[in-house]
Length: 480
Image: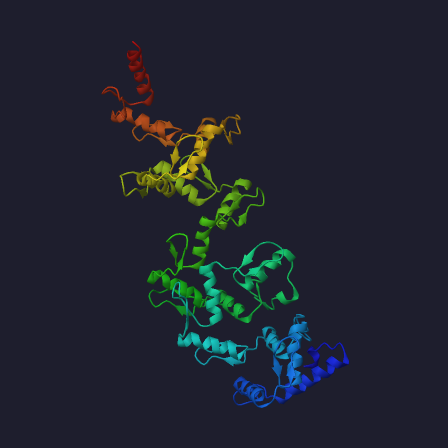
């Protein structure tokens, strides 16, 4: 014990010696018949039988032994005389040091009789035993989720309340859990403190872990061990929490609900991701242009616009795409596939986002109004695009000829005139066009269809330009 004690004065040496002697009189777990239960009972008897003569000047707590008061006062003074020789972490009580040392040795003297899992502290084993009995006495009133401990319920409630009591002193970020704050603080310091050392190293991949339990779980991935099977299907999992999440795919349970709308989610990260649509939070920032994104995969996709990387090439027209999903979407131009159908009418679309926009035409809702004129729009993007007709803004510039456009789609169509790309082909003949509108107009020469009708008379035309020319004849008649 003395190897772990830092002594600054003779007075402290006397107090520590008295404390050490007191601890020596108490049997260890191995020496006693009842282990920690015996220790707790002895301390309880001493507290009830003996008079509490030693009072703390900082608070109202009293103690039967002076050594107990000495230990207690260290909490107020911040004195931590027991230091670990392996990582320099210090503690106010020798019991806490002994428990900490087990993180280095891997020692876990308290074993569960149900699953043989080991624990460093008896209280942790007691909490673990509740998982076998399936006792979850602390139930959430919002979603009926059961928790083993009261502290677990308190932490769970932050999911619903959005409370983040752990704040960073360096910036304005707050966190729901203390361990999240600790992990965040490393981003400011740029290096890990001695207490953040990870003594358990994986020889397979070089990863390090602070806790033996985390290291043990990690090793299952290398060994392919999956001890938690699903009783509904043949899937197995390395971690119990993964199995619990998987079970929701069978039950359809969605315990995580959004307070702003009626959407529910089976997993907490799904709710967190959804909440950004309400808050507008974009935590993933591009280092090259400071643009923010709500999801990490959106940032990764955006980064390719800076690198110019387009590894996925269309075999039909040699168009290159930065994402495989973009190539699949592009291929629908050639195949004509439109997998997203409107339930209200017979129209189909090649993009889900286009269908979503289309559905608002049926609802008739146009909540976004122009301040310059009386027009309203179903989407804010439509309003932004419309506002350029008032401001004259043309933010999209052609790199070949410096022609500017108010819409990205107009620039895309224009670029085809430079590269000669004509992705829209007629199925009846060999003609190709740079615009989908042009191929639709061309198709009327084969079908004889006349889509453009005159409102003044019964005549119809295959081309819009022909209708416009025809309309002038009515205007001349009105003038005469």
